[in-house]
Length: 252
Image (cartoon, rainbow, N blue to C red; front, side):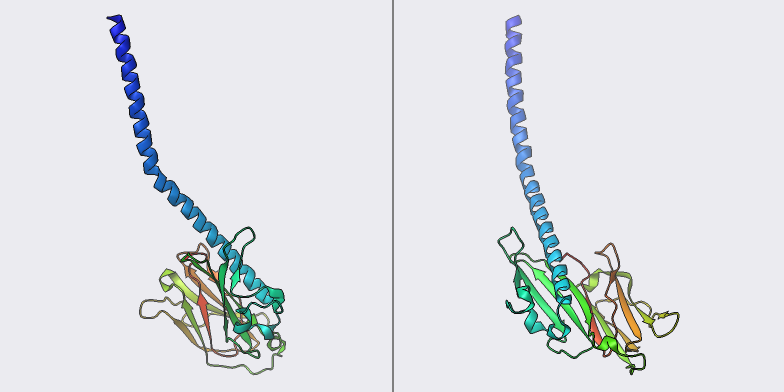
């Protein structure tokens, strides 16, 4: 009887081992898609980081150029003689073999004598649906030398639009104006104080604005996809203008 019990115990232990192996195999097989998705998300996150860094670097490189040569055709054309060959439609990160596609948009696209230019850089990677956008407003240095007695254009309009208006959250978008030819500087908020886009009004407008060298404007947008307010660089107005916000920085 003692020998029979020992055989049963050995047989039961073998069955337990086989069951354990089968269960472990099933669990491991079920987790393979999870690990694959995690690796894919990590790879996509790295692509977003790289694209964001490239966009910001391109913006800084544009700022180093002479104002007169900042035009859409020049920035989008690869040339060893322009900007030391730093610009063009693609960029490859060191250590990678797949280039990122870059598109430069300048508003206005090819004028050299305007008071300011809005430069937008869009970076994407072939095979990926993510597009990262960065923009900046560059002031004409010649216009910046104007005296306080220069003419101040009035009744200007600023239009604000978005890549994804749905991401704009309360309190929405506001414009702040600083008058710099008085002491102390006077800060005001043009009306309406805040605006929110919606399905019927995806572009926001402020009218009756005063331009010229004595008024500096800053536009702030609140987005549900950003942990901080999105603030456009300060700018002056000589004509009516348009400004676009990337409401999902580094995202879709």
